[in-house]
Amino acid sequence: MKRLLITGAAGALGRAMRARLAPLAETLRLSDISDLGTAAPHEELVQCDLGDAEAVHRLVSGCDAILHLGGISVEDKFSKILNANLLGMYNLYEAARANGHPRILFASSNHTVGFYRQDQHIDTTAPMRPDGLYGVSKCFGEAIARMYFEKFGQETALVRIGSCMEKPSNHRMLSTWMSYNDFKLLIEAVFRAPMLGCPIVWGISNNDSRWWDNSHAAYLGWKPQDNAESYRAELDAALGRPDSTAPLAVYQGGNFVKDPIFPEA
Ligand code: NAI
Ligand code: 15L
Image (tube, rainbow, N blue to C red):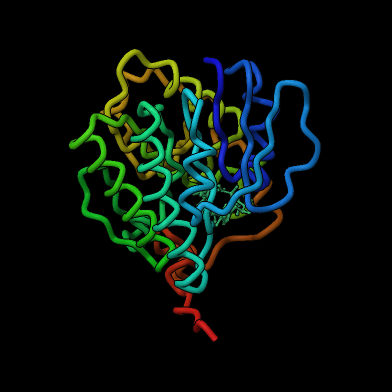
């Protein structure tokens, strides 16, 4: 493709994907509210607040596809979540509608279903059970994407990322981990698929301990290659046996279920 927009490009996943995705497009348009460093020859840098509708319209103009990573990524004050994750999603989808419906990969989250217990195995038909306002904002994001698909044919992959990082850092992540390489392979599959639609996809590696079933999305041809199990011995040695009654070991959302509602003041 000619131009791929990556929002949230200054964040953890944006930084991890920036070089990995260079072969996918002639130009990467990288955007964030924070500083993005120096542009390489194939990069365009655009600093913008997702809550600013006019700026988001300019941002999306001329893009063939969007990797939407930008937003508040943990529990926070509702005003911040409202601006970045709710208003930001609306602005992005209106901008996409005005600019020929570029395909979108939306970084949703396992916190849409965080109150399921870890002994429950679910697929994408399971009702949402968000574990905080952050999780609720991802439920909203999935809903607005779905509405734009039904009404306007806007294609989006709703990727409920588990824990995407270098390696799993606790026993919960033996189930939720997705390696950077598997995320890159998923992004390629989403943007290369002849027909996408608006599927929910669980963003996890090929983990032995997974709770989530991706069989409905087999048509994407995504075959995650890594398996968090290879880190189990290392985690056992570093952390010992986890307390089986603690939220981290009971709920799919782990410690997010314990987060308070943060006061605005
Ligand atoms: P991050 O917090 O490191 O990056 C998010 C980026 O969005 C930041 O650079 C931040 O400056 C930017 N941002 C925040 N508010 C903004 C606004 N109003 N306008 C423009 N940019 C704004 O998060 P990370 O880990 O890179 O995650 C990326 C996405 O994936 C997030 O949407 C997150 O919710 C989602 N996700 C990540 C998971 C993970 O394991 N890393 C798990 C599940 C979901
Ligand atoms: C998320 O949604 C967060 O953005 C990320 O920071 C991790 O905490 C991840 O979920 C997780 O559940 O491990």
